[in-house]
Amino acid sequence: MPYEIICIGGPCGAGKDTLVEEITKVKPQLIRVPRYTNRPIKPGEKDKINHIYLSEKEFAKLKRKGEINLVDNFYKYQYGVNIQSIDDLLRKNKRLIGIFGVCSLKLKEIFPKKTILIYVTADPEQLLERMRHRNDSEKEIWTRFEISQERLEKEIGQFDYVVHNNTSVETAVKKILKIIA
Image (cartoon, rainbow, N blue to C red; front, side, top):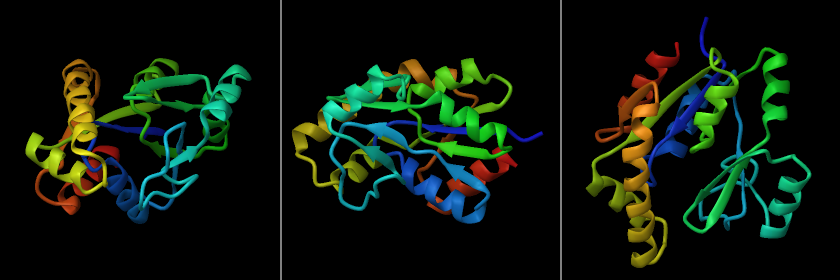
């Protein structure tokens, strides 16, 4: 039986959003689950697709109410998911895909037989180059890159698969589709 929760993780600039977008074009039955975040929306991102963008106050309020119950802190922002909404979708026999960050590891603990963790990465030079296309300052790029590299060392061994997104999006998508078939 195929996994019901497909968690895509990896460092900044690995191409996670692009890959998930392409995978859902090929497999439209997969439901993309966005994370909540209190970071500002970036050019090219879509609210309720890439993330559910909230103010810091709104994020804190939903966290207090238990509507955001798995939280990951990255750089100066928070990211979170609602376990109940994921469970509700699973009860409706839906297959899910999302970029859950460190929350992926918690989802695997909560839904161990239903969850697969796929870590997407690329060579450091490519990660930096992709990050430079986001209109962030060089200082912010290097800070996020260094944090990503530190987390990479800690996280990568906890994922079920590692996919290198160095050559083309199509190649990485094919690798992931083969894993999740």
